[in-house]
Image 1 (cartoon, rainbow, N blue to C red):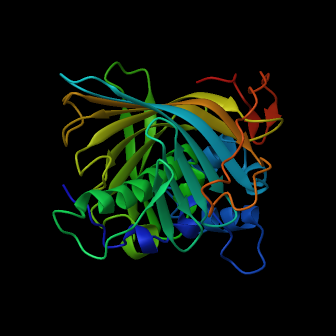
Image 2 (image 1 turned 180 degrees about the horizontal axis):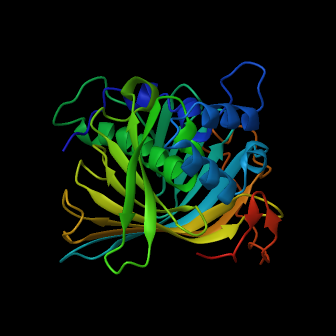
Image 3 (image 1 turned 90 degrees about the horizontal axis):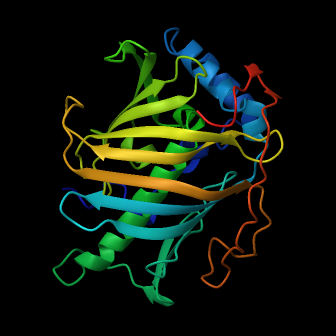
Length: 319
């Protein structure tokens, strides 16, 4: 298991690689998405184009300023009690800033665009300058915060995050389900460590749904504190539109530990269930830099009906 990234939590520059923050001078976020789509290889371009429009189109996504997620984590390992927790994420879609409030462990992690800060039960945790037997636990908290936020940003906000800086996409062809019912287009993502914070060996194989073009599942190999370099299958489901004419977002992520062939069940089952999600929330000043500036709880999500959104009709609010 590797705990200490070459791109440490203190200098982790997820930046535009996470949410498509416009890095091309004078361009709107939607224009950046479209330019990056146009630059993709011919065998990948139509897959990503359909996926972007299937999740709500680049104009809908590019207009959003922040994203707040209230979620429930359940991490089960065979033979052990499941570890349950409730967490709130605040993500600035126009910059690198982010916040994690773990309401169960009373841990808060803040990233103001330059520096991570971690608090446990209201007390600031000092990041150690070196790894020793006495400091390894504290350093792990910083690495875990960076890994968790990268996971949340990249997985909930695909396919837009696949168009970020430092991400190389290539086609892995088509894969048919064992029962023959589905034929997925599969795209492989590789990462530049100094840009994305990933390890060079990290890989992501994304399977796009053959009917609605959305992210359906993925084979994940990530050398971080969450997956530890062990392959995991991920499934994206319970898609809903967030807000009136907003992006179409998954409300359930399901990860299962497997082998390199993606066949074995190795006994781990991690689920992230969204309880509430909202874009463009009015947040307290200093929410990304101040412990006491926690966001208010979100109101209940309204029930929305399918509407025309982008390339074609959305076929319901769930997968």
